[in-house]
Length: 314
Image 1: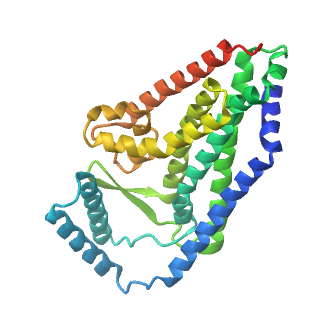
Image 2: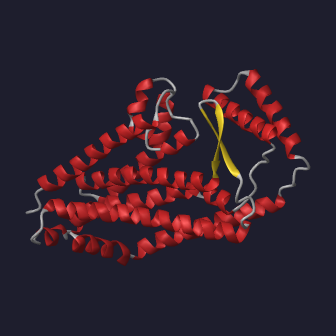
Image 3: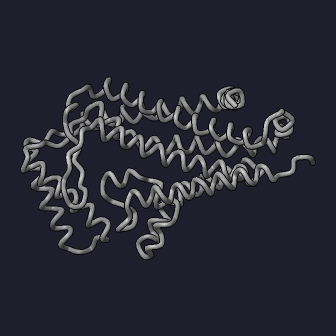
């Protein structure tokens, strides 16, 4: 089994496109850091952060009172007001730019990693059939299940490797550009209407950890599509389309129907629970984890069934 996984990893990392993807992740983090640094220099420092927060709260309360905003936006504004009030009452100034704040702000790059992993996972099985190399794999004295598992594990390892690169590069770029000022500042969030303090390290690791779950689920979905369809282009195109539209469509459905909570994309972003803002009101992390386990089992079962059923004699 180890040799099969090693062989699949060699296939992945021998490709020039793989290293281009990794380079793009690094470049994206560096460019993002430079842009934030330039913006940080251009910002005029507030003479008094307390006055600034008081003015912001007054404006937010006025916007809420006008009643033109959707309920979800109202909740976001109310959360901001609670956090601002907590800062004022506890003499806790807003976060300053630091290595941890930048590492946290760089998490949107995970979407790029997800995209690259979809490409790797969606082409993993489909390309073998497209190029006819699947026959060379199946003549080995190993079961189809082990072959499929090695491909799946290699895809997941690629995703986690890219996530590790993102974390390390973000720390390095953040330290170089913003230093370690504000290292001990707490991260504030609202859970069940109460402001909660967390250490930045715990919050950053939590964000990356929960994002890895979303990454694995999307990788598993792409891998399933690859096992079902023979075309790499179709597999990649369908997976990417659903990646970019799934969350938005689910959020729209969730505004009208409670059954939206059973849709995959309503449960993939577990980081929302760190902020106390599930897609559908009343959802819990345990519910989302249960749904993800169900989808995970179904995706892998379909991948295994289709791969073992497919006739490659022709």
